[in-house]
Amino acid sequence: MAKKLYVGGLPYRTTDSDLRQAFEQAGAVESATIIMDRATNRSKGFGFVEMTNDDDAQKAIELWNGKDFDGRRLTVNEARPLEERPRRDNDNFRGGNRNNNW
Image 1 (cartoon, rainbow, N blue to C red):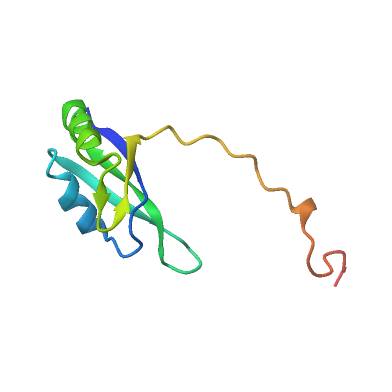
Image 2 (cartoon, rainbow, N blue to C red; image 1 turned 135 degrees about the vertical axis):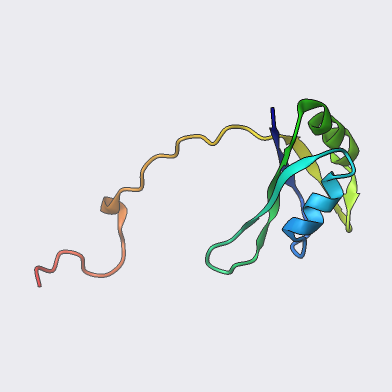
């Protein structure tokens, strides 16, 4: 079963392909994704790698956690499940005049 890893501390110029190639040193990679900022379309400096099996995931953690990657020290660990975030309520809206009945 695939195991998803969190990879933090990535250089902002790192691509999905760069990330995949680095983690393939530890074993088979199903996917490698850099998280991008929607507003600027620039890297947020972290991403996720899905390794094909648990053994390869553990090798990847041992290989890369705390190690230098293109001048930056990486943090690599098992990704936590996405937590439910509270819904944004429009009552907190502070701009413009939203009470107009045009």
